[in-house]
Amino acid sequence: MPPAPSDIRALVQAYLLRHPAEHAVVDALLAVLDAAGDPTCRTTMPAHITCSAVVVNRDRRVLHVLHRASGLVLVPGGHVEPTDRTLLAAAVREVGEETGIRPGDLCLTPLLGIPVDIDYHDIDARPEQGEPAHRHYDLRFGFYLAEEQPDLVLQDEKIAGAQWRPFAEVSSPTLRAKLLASGLDGQPQPVNASALLFDDAGRYLLHLRDNYADIWEPGSFALPGGGSEPEDETLEDTVRRELSEEVPDLVVPVLEPFAVEQATGADGLCVLIQVFAGRWNGDPDRLRLTEGVLLRWFPPEMLHRLRLSPSTRDLVLRHAAQRTAVLGDDHPDERRDAMAQGVQLAADLAQAEVSVPVPRAGGVPRLAVAADASEIARLRSELILSEPLDEDWLAICRDHLAARLVPGGDARAYVVDSPEGGLAACALALIDAVLPAPRYPKGLAARIQAVATVPAYRRRGYAQAALTALLAHLEGDGVTLYELHASDDSTPLYAALGFESDPGLMRMTRIPAPAHAPAHGT
Image 1 (cartoon, rainbow, N blue to C red):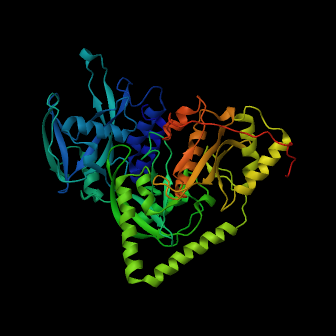
Image 2 (cartoon, rainbow, N blue to C red):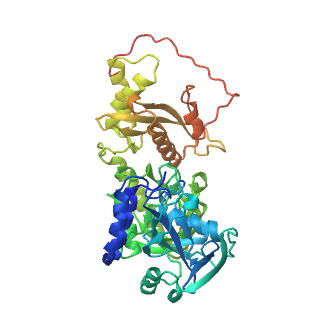
Image 3 (cartoon, helix red, strand yellow):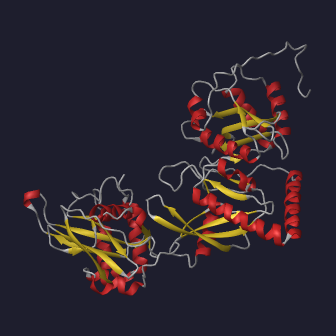
C-alpha cells in the first residue's frame, strides 16, 4: 500500500514546525493531499509527490548524480512506487537504484525521519509520453553513511556520473540553505534508545514483540525501547518516554548508559541504539502492557532458547559477565545480599493478595489469576469438551483451578479479555513433576490443557498470542517437556509454535468406573 495522505500530512506538519516560514510552499502541498487521487502516483495531475535522498559523508559532502536525460546534477531521487511503504522508503530505494548504495549503508541523521527540505519543480509537458505540464513536490530525506564510503554502482542507462559536493555547492538552493544551517556533520550517532533491565537475582527483562510483518523484529524477544521523537531532548528522554508508552506502570529510578548497539531497522537502514542499564525488582505480570505480547524475566543461561537477535543476546551476556565480575569477585558480600533480596522478593510475591488485573485492550494477553478460573473453565467446557459440563462440574473445575492459579501453584494460563466483559480467549497448562532427563533437566513437564477462543473473536490471532505468552512463561519456569492433544483444526497453530507429532508414541487411556458420582465440593 502507498503511504496514506494522513501519514504524509503528519510528516509535512512536523516539517512545518521546524520551518514555520515555509507555509507558502507547504500549503500548496497540503492542498494536493486534500484533492482526489493518490498524491504519490505519477499519473496524478496537476501535481504529485517525489522523494530524494540527501546522503552526507564524513567530510560533510552530499552525494549528487548526473542524469543523462536532463543533464542536471541532482541528489538521487524519483517517483514513489506502489511498493514503497513510506516516503522515506521511496528515497532509500531510489538512491539504491541510482547509485548501488544499500539500505544498510545508511542511517538516519538527528533530523530523524522528517524531511530536511521540501521544494517544488514545474515539469514541462511531454506530449510524446502523454504527460501534461505538472508540478513535483519533492520531499528530501537526510541520511548519513553508516560506515566508510561505499563503492558506487551507477545505473548506467540513467546516470552518467556521481559527485560528492560540499554543502556550499549543493545544486538545490533551498536544500543548500537548509544544510548550511543544519549543523549536520556526517558522523553517525544513536537515534534509538533501549532499556536493559535486570534484577537482583541476575535475570533480564525481555519484551515479546507482536508478530506483525511491518514492525521491527516481529515475534521476537527484545529490549523495551524505540526511536527518538523531535520532542526528546536526550536519549534518556527517549527511553523513558518509550517505557511510559509501552509499560505505563514500570518506573526505573536510575538508568545509566551502558553500550551502543548496531541493528537493522524495519526499513533496512542501519540503526544505532543507545542502551541504558537499570535495576528493577518486580513482577512484570502485574504491569499493564500496551504494546507487544508480554514481559518476562530470563536468566542469561536461557537466552539461547529464545528467538532473540544475536546482537541483543551478546549485549545481555556482556552485561551479565560484567556484573558477575564486579559482584562475584570484588564484592562477594554485595552479591550475596543481592541474591538474598531476590529470594525475599519472590517470597513476598508468593504471599501477596492476588486481584484481577486491569483488562488489556487490543487482544494483548495477560497472566491469568485465580479470579479467572470460572471463565477459563467455562470456555473449556463449551468450546473443547465433547460433552459440556453441567453447573456442578463447572463449579468443581472452577474451584480446583482457582486453587492452582496462584503464585507457587501448578497451573499457568494466559487470557485475552473481551471488550464486552469476560474472556475472548485462553491458554491453560498444568505442570507436572517427572523424573529428570537431558531434555528436561529440571524434571518439569506441562500439559496444555485448554486453548480456546470465543467464536466471535476467532481469526484475530488471540489464541496464538495467548499460547505464545504461556509457552514463554513456562520456559522461564524451566519447563521443557510439553504434551497436548490437538484436533485437526488446531494442528497448524501448534505446528507454527514448534510442536511436532511423534508417531512412535501411543496414547492409551484408562478411566476406572467411578463408585459414585462426586458431589460438589468433594
